Amino acid sequence: MNKNILLFALCSILTAAIYAQTYKVNLGYLNEQKASDQSDGVVLGYCSEKLVMQVGKGENTEVAAAIYIPALMLKPYIGNKIKTIRYGLMSATTETSIFIKKDLNGDNVVTKSVGDATRGWNEVELEYIIGEEGLYIGYEAKGTDPLALSDNYSENGLFLRESDGSWGNYAQMNAWNALNVEIIVNGDNMPVNVMSILNLDDIYAQQNKSFIISGIVENLSVTNVNNYEITYKIDDGETKSQIFNDKMLASNYRDTFRIELSSLNEVKDYKIEVNLSKVNGVANTNTYNNTWESLIHCKEYLFPRKVVIEEGSGTWCKYCVRGIVGMQEMKKRYPENFIGIVSHKGDVMAASSYAQLHSKFFSAGLPNSVVNRKSNLVVDPALENLEKAFKKECIPSDIGIEVTASFTSNNKDAIDIRTTTTFGFSEENVAYRIALVLVEDSVTGTGQQYEQLNAYTKESGGQFDGMEMGGFENLPYVVPADQMVYENVARGIYKSFVGNLNSVPYIVEKGVGYKFSYTIDKTSFKSAKVNNKENLLIVALLLDTNTGEIINADRVKVGEYNPLDMTNSEISELKVYAIDGRICVEGAYDNLHVFTSDGIEVGSDNLQYGIYFVQIIRGSDIIVRKVYISQ
Image (tube, rainbow, N blue to C red; front, side, top):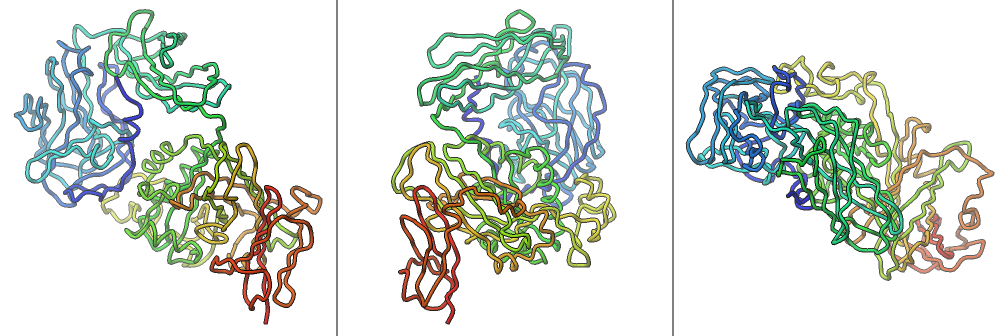
């Protein structure tokens, strides 16, 4: 039985340098085909075909790595044979040998010497009869960073031998992905009607509304699967089932199931058990991963969550193309729920108001990224890391935020921004703020200051030679400005990195939408140094002021000036100005607060010269205006 909750916890993304172990990881891609077809038997392992992460000790030395296949996973194949072991390498090796062990610290039950092995996929033929024990499958070799990891994760997917001979489970310690090792099983008594559930998505349901459960299944037999049955039970309720027909799943082919369930009427967490009960109309003979338990989180209100990933980058940083590619691909794969913001440092696109991102999260250097501003989700911005963290965070929220933005005139030199924050609960003394980010997409420029250094060029013949990196492998070490387009560049954050004071009320009521308005005025807009006003976006970040983390977010393209747009006009059109050191407001309102540029609240009169932020509250609406008091 697999516990979805525990597996999710194990999959937290950590940086590669958390522990002082002897192995290190580089990131790149090798998409080389395997030598033989999967129809030769059933493939067991945890990897995909991609070779994604390069692991080693940074020098030409001995390494050893293995995966573990539990006895329960091997049980349907007892008496059959391991015919082939496949393994992927990121660089060529010498003194290579393949092994099978029952105990990592014990003797090999099988050893087969290979000698020299090439980069890419290799395979070794052998015959080993499967018994009742679990097995460690791996290889040892001599080479410079030769170990290849895939883009999949398993808690049994990566064991590495340290210099002192001990073994470490790097999947559990560092959350590194699975080793590119797999076995092909065949024989005279291969099982039929064997399938497994690979994963079950987290389940969120809104009270009194139908919802979906979904997961992925795999055929682990040598016969085709034409249909399969999923049973499920919520708490101690009735066991129900659904049959999925008209399939044609060959060995190791996968399928995604989706089941719509009727509504739940109580706000709480429900336990659900899902079982892959039948294959081709008969009982599923597999007992490994055929049953999953999870929770259904039933809420009165559910709002879509948009996951914010803020990346640090620089044209001078030759490894930052890894982040460029990762962020571009995330934007393509998850256009609705992914919000990318790229904060440049030390180049022409750097925004001083975003410097705190680098000092708080990126002390280890660039490239780097942080997901929803969570200190435990500071990750290298390779696609695999970004996608894992995104999937972990992309769950519905009980607070929603929406943003609109438009230029204040046809001159396009200032922007009016309006947000609506809605809570799925009532509470006093809440501590939230809204930060507003001005983002320019598809930034281009001319000259040396827009050239990008590129460590992944194949011209250099260095450690990344032969790896794929989103096309950068075919570009020179210094990528000319006319071949670079910089996406989602942060031009400024308002009023500050930590948001706007009192942009969300301290007392909130369930279901009420609280409005906040802010204007990026002409002075601030000019300081943003925008290249193309047609490519501007506003990102609204809802921040928890106790933790600094992003709770939810929204993004919108800055719209054209529309004098006929009367949305929220009554409060947003209030006139705010200063006369003789006193703040004046034309129009009706409930409360007024005045803050210095340092966030200190002061009175509304007898003000010294300088910049002040005036917060006006009427009902559930909040606006902020910047006012200058001259000498």
